[in-house]
Amino acid sequence: MFGIQPRDVSDDDFNPRRRRWSLWTTPPPAASMPTTSHTGRYTTPRKGHANAYHMSVKFEDLCGFMVEGNVDDVNVLNEVRERIREQGRVWWALEASKGANWYLQPRISSNGGQGVISVTSLKLSVLTNTVTLRRLIRKGVPPALRPKVWLSVSGAAKKRSTVPETYYDELIRATEGKTTPATRQIDHDLPRTFPCHPWLNSEEGQASLRRVLVGYSFRDSEVGYCQGLNYVAALLLLVMKTEEDAFWMLAVLLENVLVSDCYTDTLSGCHVEQRVFKDLLAKKCPRIAAHLEAMGFDVSLVATEWFLCLFSKTLPSETTLRVWDVLFNEGAKVLFHVALAIFKMREDDLLRILHIGDVIDVLQTTAHHLYEPDELLTFAFDKIGSMTTNTITKERKRHETVVMAELDQRTRRLGSLKMDA
Image 1 (cartoon, rainbow, N blue to C red):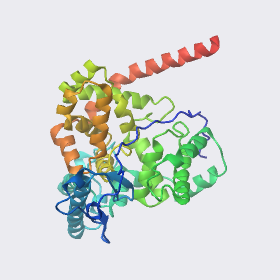
Image 2 (cartoon, one colour):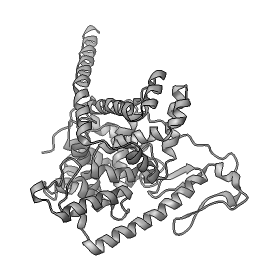
Image 3 (tube, rainbow, N blue to C red):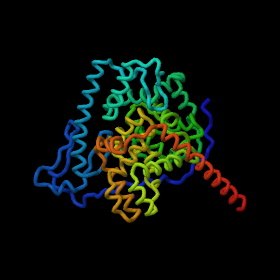
Image 4 (cartoon, rainbow, N blue to C red):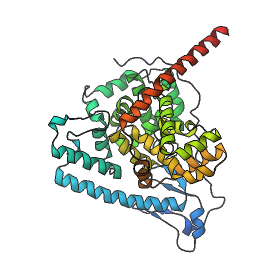
Protein backbone atom coordinates (compact mmCIF):
# COMPACT_ATOMS: atom_id res chain seq x y z
CA MET A 1 0.00 0.00 0.00
CA PHE A 2 2.76 2.42 0.91
CA GLY A 3 5.56 1.05 -1.24
CA ILE A 4 8.99 -0.21 -0.30
CA GLN A 5 11.96 2.13 0.10
CA PRO A 6 14.65 0.75 -2.23
CA ARG A 7 17.27 3.42 -2.61
CA ASP A 8 20.59 3.30 -0.82
CA VAL A 9 21.43 6.12 1.55
CA SER A 10 25.02 7.20 2.04
CA ASP A 11 26.54 6.85 5.46
CA ASP A 12 28.49 10.07 4.97
CA ASP A 13 27.84 12.64 7.69
CA PHE A 14 25.93 15.76 6.80
CA ASN A 15 28.79 17.67 8.44
CA PRO A 16 26.88 20.69 9.69
CA ARG A 17 29.17 23.36 11.04
CA ARG A 18 28.83 23.60 14.78
CA ARG A 19 28.02 26.80 16.58
CA ARG A 20 31.11 28.40 18.07
CA TRP A 21 30.45 29.76 21.51
CA SER A 22 32.88 30.91 24.17
CA LEU A 23 32.31 29.25 27.54
CA TRP A 24 33.06 30.57 30.97
CA THR A 25 36.37 29.48 32.41
CA THR A 26 35.20 30.55 35.86
CA PRO A 27 31.65 31.22 37.01
CA PRO A 28 30.70 34.92 36.71
CA PRO A 29 29.24 36.88 39.61
CA ALA A 30 25.73 35.76 40.45
CA ALA A 31 24.32 39.18 39.59
CA SER A 32 25.61 38.90 36.03
CA MET A 33 23.88 35.62 35.27
CA PRO A 34 20.52 35.74 33.52
CA THR A 35 17.95 33.78 35.45
CA THR A 36 14.54 32.47 34.53
CA SER A 37 11.56 33.68 36.51
CA HIS A 38 8.34 31.74 36.92
CA THR A 39 6.92 33.64 33.92
CA GLY A 40 9.74 32.48 31.68
CA ARG A 41 11.16 36.01 31.32
CA TYR A 42 14.86 36.48 31.76
CA THR A 43 16.46 39.02 34.07
CA THR A 44 19.63 40.83 32.99
CA PRO A 45 22.68 42.06 34.91
CA ARG A 46 22.40 45.08 37.14
CA LYS A 47 24.31 48.28 36.47
CA GLY A 48 27.98 47.99 37.24
CA HIS A 49 28.28 44.65 35.45
CA ALA A 50 28.77 45.97 31.91
CA ASN A 51 31.44 43.37 31.23
CA ALA A 52 28.79 40.68 31.64
CA TYR A 53 27.27 41.70 28.29
CA HIS A 54 30.30 40.19 26.58
CA MET A 55 30.14 36.92 28.52
CA SER A 56 28.56 33.74 27.30
CA VAL A 57 25.42 32.69 29.14
CA LYS A 58 23.13 29.68 28.94
CA PHE A 59 19.38 30.08 28.70
CA GLU A 60 16.28 28.25 27.49
CA ASP A 61 14.52 29.60 24.43
CA LEU A 62 10.80 29.55 23.64
CA CYS A 63 11.00 26.06 22.10
CA GLY A 64 12.81 24.56 25.07
CA PHE A 65 16.32 24.48 23.56
CA MET A 66 19.21 25.10 25.91
CA VAL A 67 21.36 27.60 24.02
CA GLU A 68 24.34 29.80 24.72
CA GLY A 69 24.68 33.43 23.76
CA ASN A 70 25.40 36.79 25.30
CA VAL A 71 23.28 39.05 27.46
CA ASP A 72 22.33 41.15 24.45
CA ASP A 73 20.69 38.02 23.02
CA VAL A 74 18.72 37.59 26.24
CA ASN A 75 17.54 41.21 26.15
CA VAL A 76 16.43 40.86 22.54
CA LEU A 77 14.51 37.68 23.39
CA ASN A 78 12.68 39.50 26.18
CA GLU A 79 11.60 42.18 23.71
CA VAL A 80 10.57 39.55 21.15
CA ARG A 81 8.44 37.76 23.75
CA GLU A 82 6.64 40.96 24.57
CA ARG A 83 5.86 41.56 20.91
CA ILE A 84 4.61 37.98 20.62
CA ARG A 85 2.12 38.74 23.39
CA GLU A 86 1.07 41.95 21.64
CA GLN A 87 0.67 40.16 18.31
CA GLY A 88 -1.37 37.48 20.05
CA ARG A 89 -3.84 40.12 21.23
CA VAL A 90 -4.26 41.26 17.61
CA TRP A 91 -5.06 37.71 16.48
CA TRP A 92 -7.51 37.16 19.32
CA ALA A 93 -9.27 40.45 18.52
CA LEU A 94 -9.66 39.38 14.89
CA GLU A 95 -11.03 36.01 15.98
CA ALA A 96 -13.58 37.84 18.09
CA SER A 97 -14.67 40.05 15.18
CA LYS A 98 -14.31 37.72 12.17
CA GLY A 99 -14.91 34.35 13.80
CA ALA A 100 -12.62 31.75 15.33
CA ASN A 101 -11.63 30.18 12.00
CA TRP A 102 -11.73 33.20 9.68
CA TYR A 103 -8.33 32.30 8.19
CA LEU A 104 -9.56 28.83 7.24
CA GLN A 105 -11.95 30.26 4.63
CA PRO A 106 -11.22 30.13 0.85
CA ARG A 107 -8.57 32.67 -0.08
CA ILE A 108 -6.22 33.80 -2.81
CA SER A 109 -3.13 31.68 -2.30
CA SER A 110 0.51 32.44 -3.08
CA ASN A 111 1.65 28.94 -2.12
CA GLY A 112 1.46 26.46 -4.95
CA GLY A 113 -2.25 26.85 -5.63
CA GLN A 114 -3.54 25.44 -2.35
CA GLY A 115 -6.95 26.93 -1.59
CA VAL A 116 -7.04 29.05 -4.77
CA ILE A 117 -10.37 30.49 -5.87
CA SER A 118 -11.17 31.74 -9.36
CA VAL A 119 -11.11 35.44 -10.14
CA THR A 120 -14.72 35.34 -11.27
CA SER A 121 -15.83 34.16 -7.82
CA LEU A 122 -13.60 36.62 -5.97
CA LYS A 123 -15.35 38.54 -3.24
CA LEU A 124 -14.11 41.64 -1.49
CA SER A 125 -14.25 39.86 1.87
CA VAL A 126 -11.98 37.09 0.58
CA LEU A 127 -9.49 39.61 -0.78
CA THR A 128 -9.54 41.51 2.49
CA ASN A 129 -8.95 38.36 4.52
CA THR A 130 -6.08 37.29 2.24
CA VAL A 131 -4.30 40.64 2.54
CA THR A 132 -4.93 40.76 6.30
CA LEU A 133 -3.65 37.21 6.79
CA ARG A 134 -0.50 37.84 4.75
CA ARG A 135 0.30 40.94 6.80
CA LEU A 136 -0.41 39.18 10.09
CA ILE A 137 1.66 36.12 9.25
CA ARG A 138 4.68 38.25 8.33
CA LYS A 139 4.43 39.79 11.80
CA GLY A 140 4.29 36.33 13.38
CA VAL A 141 1.70 33.68 14.25
CA PRO A 142 1.07 33.29 18.00
CA PRO A 143 2.54 29.96 19.21
CA ALA A 144 -0.87 28.70 20.38
CA LEU A 145 -2.34 29.20 16.90
CA ARG A 146 0.61 27.95 14.84
CA PRO A 147 -0.52 24.33 14.47
CA LYS A 148 -3.97 25.30 13.17
CA VAL A 149 -2.72 28.16 10.98
CA TRP A 150 0.13 26.15 9.46
CA LEU A 151 -2.12 23.19 8.66
CA SER A 152 -4.53 25.53 6.91
CA VAL A 153 -2.34 27.91 4.91
CA SER A 154 0.15 25.22 3.81
CA GLY A 155 -2.50 22.90 2.43
CA ALA A 156 -1.59 20.10 4.86
CA ALA A 157 -5.13 19.86 6.23
CA LYS A 158 -6.51 19.54 2.72
CA LYS A 159 -3.92 16.88 1.86
CA ARG A 160 -4.81 14.86 4.96
CA SER A 161 -8.53 15.05 4.10
CA THR A 162 -7.93 13.10 0.87
CA VAL A 163 -6.99 9.88 2.70
CA PRO A 164 -8.76 7.79 5.35
CA GLU A 165 -8.52 9.06 8.94
CA THR A 166 -6.59 5.93 9.87
CA TYR A 167 -3.89 6.52 7.21
CA TYR A 168 -1.07 7.56 9.54
CA ASP A 169 -1.74 4.84 12.13
CA GLU A 170 -1.88 2.18 9.43
CA LEU A 171 1.31 3.52 7.85
CA ILE A 172 3.19 3.30 11.15
CA ARG A 173 1.92 -0.21 11.82
CA ALA A 174 2.95 -1.26 8.29
CA THR A 175 6.52 -0.05 8.86
CA GLU A 176 7.07 -1.62 12.28
CA GLY A 177 10.05 -3.96 12.36
CA LYS A 178 11.09 -3.22 8.77
CA THR A 179 14.68 -2.29 8.00
CA THR A 180 15.78 -0.35 4.94
CA PRO A 181 18.78 1.83 4.07
CA ALA A 182 16.59 4.79 5.05
CA THR A 183 15.69 3.41 8.50
CA ARG A 184 19.35 2.62 9.18
CA GLN A 185 20.37 6.19 8.33
CA ILE A 186 17.51 7.57 10.45
CA ASP A 187 18.64 5.50 13.43
CA HIS A 188 22.17 6.80 12.92
CA ASP A 189 21.00 10.44 12.88
CA LEU A 190 18.45 10.40 15.73
CA PRO A 191 20.95 10.86 18.62
CA ARG A 192 22.55 13.78 16.77
CA THR A 193 19.31 15.65 16.16
CA PHE A 194 19.17 18.66 18.49
CA PRO A 195 20.75 16.91 21.50
CA CYS A 196 20.46 20.24 23.37
CA HIS A 197 16.68 19.80 23.57
CA PRO A 198 15.66 17.66 26.55
CA TRP A 199 12.58 16.09 24.94
CA LEU A 200 14.16 15.46 21.54
CA ASN A 201 17.14 13.92 23.33
CA SER A 202 14.87 11.62 25.34
CA GLU A 203 13.80 8.09 24.46
CA GLU A 204 10.22 9.25 23.94
CA GLY A 205 11.21 12.16 21.71
CA GLN A 206 13.52 10.10 19.52
CA ALA A 207 10.90 7.37 19.15
CA SER A 208 8.33 9.95 18.05
CA LEU A 209 10.73 11.53 15.57
CA ARG A 210 11.69 8.12 14.23
CA ARG A 211 8.05 7.20 13.51
CA VAL A 212 7.49 10.41 11.56
CA LEU A 213 10.68 10.03 9.48
CA VAL A 214 10.30 6.29 8.87
CA GLY A 215 6.63 6.74 8.04
CA TYR A 216 7.41 9.33 5.40
CA SER A 217 10.28 7.24 3.97
CA PHE A 218 7.70 4.55 3.17
CA ARG A 219 5.12 7.04 1.91
CA ASP A 220 7.56 8.38 -0.68
CA SER A 221 10.20 5.80 -1.57
CA GLU A 222 11.82 8.16 -4.10
CA VAL A 223 12.70 10.58 -1.31
CA GLY A 224 13.05 7.97 1.39
CA TYR A 225 15.20 9.83 3.87
CA CYS A 226 17.76 12.57 3.40
CA GLN A 227 19.96 14.04 6.09
CA GLY A 228 18.54 17.42 7.01
CA LEU A 229 14.97 16.16 7.18
CA ASN A 230 15.61 15.02 10.76
CA TYR A 231 16.06 18.64 11.88
CA VAL A 232 13.01 19.83 9.95
CA ALA A 233 10.78 17.04 11.31
CA ALA A 234 12.07 17.55 14.86
CA LEU A 235 11.12 21.23 14.87
CA LEU A 236 7.75 20.41 13.31
CA LEU A 237 7.10 17.98 16.17
CA LEU A 238 7.81 20.67 18.75
CA VAL A 239 5.40 23.08 17.10
CA MET A 240 2.59 20.78 15.98
CA LYS A 241 2.49 18.80 19.25
CA THR A 242 1.18 15.61 17.59
CA GLU A 243 3.04 13.14 15.38
CA GLU A 244 0.28 13.00 12.81
CA ASP A 245 0.15 16.77 12.36
CA ALA A 246 3.96 16.90 12.09
CA PHE A 247 3.85 14.10 9.51
CA TRP A 248 1.37 15.95 7.30
CA MET A 249 3.33 19.19 7.57
CA LEU A 250 6.43 17.29 6.45
CA ALA A 251 4.43 15.78 3.58
CA VAL A 252 3.10 19.11 2.33
CA LEU A 253 6.57 20.64 2.58
CA LEU A 254 8.18 17.98 0.40
CA GLU A 255 5.27 17.48 -1.98
CA ASN A 256 3.87 20.99 -2.44
CA VAL A 257 5.77 23.84 -0.79
CA LEU A 258 9.38 23.11 -1.77
CA VAL A 259 10.77 22.45 -5.23
CA SER A 260 10.63 18.78 -6.23
CA ASP A 261 13.70 16.54 -5.99
CA CYS A 262 15.35 18.59 -3.26
CA TYR A 263 15.73 15.50 -1.07
CA THR A 264 16.02 12.71 -3.62
CA ASP A 265 19.13 10.58 -4.00
CA THR A 266 20.83 12.98 -6.43
CA LEU A 267 19.70 16.18 -4.60
CA SER A 268 19.06 17.58 -8.08
CA GLY A 269 16.47 20.04 -6.82
CA CYS A 270 18.90 21.34 -4.21
CA HIS A 271 21.60 21.80 -6.86
CA VAL A 272 19.13 23.83 -8.93
CA GLU A 273 18.17 25.99 -5.93
CA GLN A 274 21.83 26.77 -5.23
CA ARG A 275 22.36 27.99 -8.79
CA VAL A 276 19.21 30.08 -8.66
CA PHE A 277 20.39 31.58 -5.37
CA LYS A 278 23.78 32.45 -6.86
CA ASP A 279 22.05 34.28 -9.72
CA LEU A 280 19.74 36.12 -7.35
CA LEU A 281 22.68 37.17 -5.18
CA ALA A 282 24.32 38.68 -8.27
CA LYS A 283 21.12 40.60 -9.06
CA LYS A 284 20.13 41.70 -5.57
CA CYS A 285 23.59 42.10 -3.99
CA PRO A 286 25.93 42.64 -6.95
CA ARG A 287 28.85 44.05 -4.93
CA ILE A 288 28.83 41.08 -2.56
CA ALA A 289 28.52 38.58 -5.40
CA ALA A 290 31.39 40.12 -7.36
CA HIS A 291 33.65 40.24 -4.30
CA LEU A 292 32.95 36.63 -3.31
CA GLU A 293 33.45 35.42 -6.87
CA ALA A 294 36.81 37.19 -7.04
CA MET A 295 37.76 35.34 -3.82
CA GLY A 296 36.66 32.04 -5.28
CA PHE A 297 33.97 31.62 -2.62
CA ASP A 298 31.10 29.29 -3.52
CA VAL A 299 27.90 30.41 -1.78
CA SER A 300 26.69 26.81 -1.64
CA LEU A 301 29.26 26.24 1.12
CA VAL A 302 26.81 27.90 3.50
CA ALA A 303 23.53 28.00 1.58
CA THR A 304 23.18 24.25 1.00
CA GLU A 305 22.59 23.60 4.69
CA TRP A 306 20.29 26.62 4.91
CA PHE A 307 18.03 25.26 2.18
CA LEU A 308 18.13 21.57 3.17
CA CYS A 309 17.44 22.25 6.86
CA LEU A 310 15.21 25.27 6.16
CA PHE A 311 17.40 27.36 8.51
CA SER A 312 16.52 25.15 11.49
CA LYS A 313 20.22 24.53 12.22
CA THR A 314 21.27 28.07 11.42
CA LEU A 315 18.86 30.55 12.99
CA PRO A 316 17.64 30.61 16.61
CA SER A 317 14.52 28.46 16.87
CA GLU A 318 12.12 31.36 17.46
CA THR A 319 13.45 33.16 14.38
CA THR A 320 13.25 29.95 12.34
CA LEU A 321 9.58 29.58 13.23
CA ARG A 322 8.90 33.13 12.07
CA VAL A 323 10.54 32.28 8.75
CA TRP A 324 8.42 29.12 8.54
CA ASP A 325 5.26 31.13 9.27
CA VAL A 326 5.85 32.97 5.99
CA LEU A 327 7.23 29.92 4.15
CA PHE A 328 4.04 27.92 4.64
CA ASN A 329 1.89 30.83 3.48
CA GLU A 330 3.95 32.26 0.61
CA GLY A 331 6.01 29.34 -0.64
CA ALA A 332 9.65 28.46 -1.25
CA LYS A 333 10.59 31.93 -2.56
CA VAL A 334 10.80 32.91 1.13
CA LEU A 335 13.99 30.83 1.50
CA PHE A 336 15.69 32.99 -1.13
CA HIS A 337 14.51 36.20 0.55
CA VAL A 338 15.92 35.10 3.92
CA ALA A 339 19.21 33.77 2.54
CA LEU A 340 19.80 36.99 0.62
CA ALA A 341 18.95 39.03 3.72
CA ILE A 342 21.64 37.32 5.80
CA PHE A 343 24.24 38.28 3.19
CA LYS A 344 22.84 41.79 2.80
CA MET A 345 22.85 42.48 6.54
CA ARG A 346 26.62 42.06 6.63
CA GLU A 347 27.46 43.60 3.27
CA ASP A 348 30.07 46.04 4.59
CA ASP A 349 31.84 43.34 6.60
CA LEU A 350 31.79 40.86 3.74
CA LEU A 351 33.31 43.39 1.34
CA ARG A 352 36.29 43.85 3.69
CA ILE A 353 36.99 40.12 4.05
CA LEU A 354 39.83 38.53 2.09
CA HIS A 355 39.71 34.92 3.29
CA ILE A 356 37.04 32.30 2.58
CA GLY A 357 37.06 30.99 6.14
CA ASP A 358 36.26 34.48 7.44
CA VAL A 359 33.23 34.70 5.13
CA ILE A 360 31.84 31.50 6.61
CA ASP A 361 32.51 32.69 10.17
CA VAL A 362 30.78 36.05 9.62
CA LEU A 363 27.70 34.49 8.05
CA GLN A 364 27.43 31.77 10.70
CA THR A 365 27.91 34.16 13.61
CA THR A 366 25.37 36.58 12.16
CA ALA A 367 22.76 33.87 11.63
CA HIS A 368 23.27 32.23 15.03
CA HIS A 369 22.64 35.53 16.83
CA LEU A 370 19.60 36.66 14.83
CA TYR A 371 17.26 36.54 17.81
CA GLU A 372 15.35 39.53 16.38
CA PRO A 373 13.12 38.02 13.68
CA ASP A 374 11.57 41.36 12.66
CA GLU A 375 15.00 42.69 11.73
CA LEU A 376 15.69 39.67 9.50
CA LEU A 377 12.27 39.70 7.84
CA THR A 378 12.41 43.46 7.24
CA PHE A 379 15.68 42.96 5.37
CA ALA A 380 14.25 39.94 3.58
CA PHE A 381 11.21 41.68 2.14
CA ASP A 382 11.85 45.43 2.28
CA LYS A 383 15.58 45.68 1.58
CA ILE A 384 15.86 42.76 -0.85
CA GLY A 385 12.77 43.75 -2.80
CA SER A 386 10.12 41.66 -4.50
CA MET A 387 10.74 38.33 -6.20
CA THR A 388 7.77 36.62 -7.77
CA THR A 389 7.30 32.88 -7.78
CA ASN A 390 7.08 33.00 -11.59
CA THR A 391 10.50 34.66 -11.83
CA ILE A 392 12.09 32.01 -9.61
CA THR A 393 10.33 29.23 -11.54
CA LYS A 394 11.81 30.54 -14.81
CA GLU A 395 15.27 30.60 -13.22
CA ARG A 396 14.82 27.02 -12.04
CA LYS A 397 13.85 25.81 -15.50
CA ARG A 398 16.87 27.54 -16.98
CA HIS A 399 19.24 25.70 -14.64
CA GLU A 400 17.43 22.37 -14.42
CA THR A 401 18.52 21.12 -17.84
CA VAL A 402 22.17 21.89 -17.12
CA VAL A 403 22.07 20.30 -13.67
CA MET A 404 20.41 17.13 -14.92
CA ALA A 405 22.96 16.85 -17.76
CA GLU A 406 25.84 17.24 -15.31
CA LEU A 407 24.36 14.62 -12.94
CA ASP A 408 23.85 12.22 -15.84
CA GLN A 409 27.45 12.74 -16.95
CA ARG A 410 28.67 12.12 -13.41
CA THR A 411 26.62 8.91 -13.18
CA ARG A 412 28.06 7.64 -16.45
CA ARG A 413 31.59 8.50 -15.36
CA LEU A 414 31.15 6.63 -12.08
CA GLY A 415 29.71 3.67 -13.94
CA SER A 416 32.68 3.64 -16.28
CA LEU A 417 35.10 3.74 -13.34
CA LYS A 418 33.34 0.77 -11.75
CA MET A 419 33.56 -1.23 -14.98
CA ASP A 420 37.27 -0.44 -15.28
CA ALA A 421 37.83 -1.54 -11.69
